[in-house]
Length: 125
Image (tube, rainbow, N blue to C red):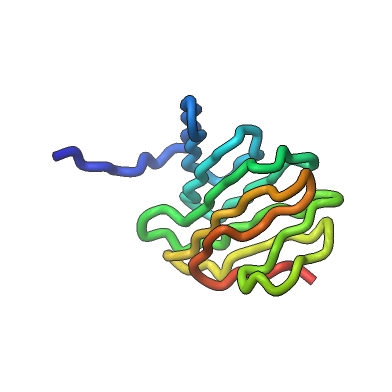
Protein backbone atom coordinates (compact mmCIF):
# COMPACT_ATOMS: atom_id res chain seq x y z
CA UNK A 1 0.00 0.00 0.00
CA UNK A 2 0.88 3.66 -0.10
CA UNK A 3 1.77 5.49 3.09
CA UNK A 4 0.88 9.19 3.38
CA UNK A 5 3.08 11.53 5.39
CA UNK A 6 2.40 15.28 5.65
CA UNK A 7 5.39 17.41 4.71
CA UNK A 8 6.89 19.91 7.15
CA UNK A 9 6.73 22.72 4.58
CA UNK A 10 3.87 24.85 3.28
CA UNK A 11 2.44 23.23 0.16
CA UNK A 12 -0.25 24.23 -2.33
CA UNK A 13 -1.37 21.85 -5.05
CA UNK A 14 -3.98 23.00 -7.57
CA UNK A 15 -5.79 20.23 -9.39
CA UNK A 16 -8.70 20.27 -11.78
CA UNK A 17 -11.21 19.66 -8.98
CA UNK A 18 -9.75 20.71 -5.61
CA UNK A 19 -6.91 22.92 -4.42
CA UNK A 20 -5.01 21.41 -1.47
CA UNK A 21 -2.93 23.55 0.87
CA UNK A 22 -0.80 22.40 3.81
CA UNK A 23 0.48 25.34 5.80
CA UNK A 24 -0.43 28.28 7.99
CA UNK A 25 -2.52 30.50 5.72
CA UNK A 26 -4.59 30.41 2.58
CA UNK A 27 -6.58 33.04 0.71
CA UNK A 28 -9.29 31.10 -1.09
CA UNK A 29 -9.45 31.63 -4.84
CA UNK A 30 -10.78 28.40 -6.34
CA UNK A 31 -14.17 26.67 -6.46
CA UNK A 32 -13.17 23.92 -4.03
CA UNK A 33 -10.32 24.05 -1.54
CA UNK A 34 -8.96 21.92 1.30
CA UNK A 35 -6.68 23.54 3.86
CA UNK A 36 -4.70 21.43 6.34
CA UNK A 37 -3.23 23.58 9.10
CA UNK A 38 0.29 22.63 10.14
CA UNK A 39 0.36 25.36 12.82
CA UNK A 40 -1.89 28.24 13.88
CA UNK A 41 -3.51 29.22 10.62
CA UNK A 42 -5.86 31.64 8.90
CA UNK A 43 -8.18 30.88 6.00
CA UNK A 44 -9.45 33.96 4.16
CA UNK A 45 -12.51 33.68 1.91
CA UNK A 46 -12.89 36.18 -0.96
CA UNK A 47 -14.83 39.42 -0.40
CA UNK A 48 -17.19 38.32 -3.17
CA UNK A 49 -17.52 34.57 -3.57
CA UNK A 50 -19.30 32.66 -6.28
CA UNK A 51 -22.30 30.79 -4.86
CA UNK A 52 -21.30 27.14 -4.59
CA UNK A 53 -17.66 27.78 -3.72
CA UNK A 54 -16.62 25.48 -0.91
CA UNK A 55 -13.77 24.84 1.43
CA UNK A 56 -12.76 22.56 4.26
CA UNK A 57 -10.15 23.38 6.88
CA UNK A 58 -8.73 21.03 9.49
CA UNK A 59 -5.72 20.56 11.73
CA UNK A 60 -2.91 18.37 10.46
CA UNK A 61 -2.23 14.99 12.02
CA UNK A 62 -1.45 15.37 15.75
CA UNK A 63 -1.62 19.19 15.53
CA UNK A 64 -3.47 21.16 18.21
CA UNK A 65 -3.84 24.69 16.94
CA UNK A 66 -6.46 27.38 16.42
CA UNK A 67 -7.88 27.74 12.92
CA UNK A 68 -9.25 31.19 12.09
CA UNK A 69 -11.64 31.94 9.25
CA UNK A 70 -10.69 35.57 8.71
CA UNK A 71 -12.99 38.55 9.09
CA UNK A 72 -13.82 39.91 5.63
CA UNK A 73 -15.74 43.14 5.14
CA UNK A 74 -19.39 42.37 4.31
CA UNK A 75 -18.98 38.57 4.70
CA UNK A 76 -20.99 36.53 7.25
CA UNK A 77 -20.50 32.97 8.55
CA UNK A 78 -23.24 30.68 9.82
CA UNK A 79 -22.85 29.30 13.36
CA UNK A 80 -22.10 25.56 13.50
CA UNK A 81 -25.43 25.01 15.31
CA UNK A 82 -27.08 26.40 12.15
CA UNK A 83 -29.30 28.65 14.26
CA UNK A 84 -27.81 32.05 13.47
CA UNK A 85 -25.42 34.04 11.32
CA UNK A 86 -22.47 35.95 12.71
CA UNK A 87 -22.40 39.62 11.79
CA UNK A 88 -20.46 40.70 8.75
CA UNK A 89 -16.75 41.41 9.13
CA UNK A 90 -16.43 38.95 12.05
CA UNK A 91 -13.89 36.14 12.28
CA UNK A 92 -14.78 32.53 13.00
CA UNK A 93 -12.31 30.41 14.97
CA UNK A 94 -11.82 26.91 16.34
CA UNK A 95 -11.11 25.80 19.89
CA UNK A 96 -7.65 24.47 19.02
CA UNK A 97 -8.26 20.72 19.32
CA UNK A 98 -6.49 18.19 17.12
CA UNK A 99 -9.84 17.10 15.66
CA UNK A 100 -11.05 20.60 14.68
CA UNK A 101 -12.40 20.76 11.15
CA UNK A 102 -14.95 22.84 9.26
CA UNK A 103 -16.48 22.68 5.79
CA UNK A 104 -18.41 25.65 4.41
CA UNK A 105 -20.19 26.53 1.18
CA UNK A 106 -20.95 29.96 -0.24
CA UNK A 107 -24.73 30.43 -0.44
CA UNK A 108 -24.32 33.93 -1.86
CA UNK A 109 -21.39 36.21 -2.66
CA UNK A 110 -21.12 37.20 1.03
CA UNK A 111 -22.79 34.40 3.02
CA UNK A 112 -21.04 31.16 4.00
CA UNK A 113 -23.04 28.22 5.39
CA UNK A 114 -21.69 25.38 7.52
CA UNK A 115 -21.77 22.05 5.70
CA UNK A 116 -20.06 20.07 8.48
CA UNK A 117 -17.91 20.71 11.54
CA UNK A 118 -16.08 18.99 14.36
CA UNK A 119 -14.94 20.72 17.53
CA UNK A 120 -15.90 24.05 19.01
CA UNK A 121 -16.22 26.98 16.58
CA UNK A 122 -17.03 30.55 17.63
CA UNK A 123 -18.08 33.65 15.68
CA UNK A 124 -16.14 36.61 17.09
CA UNK A 125 -18.24 39.15 18.96
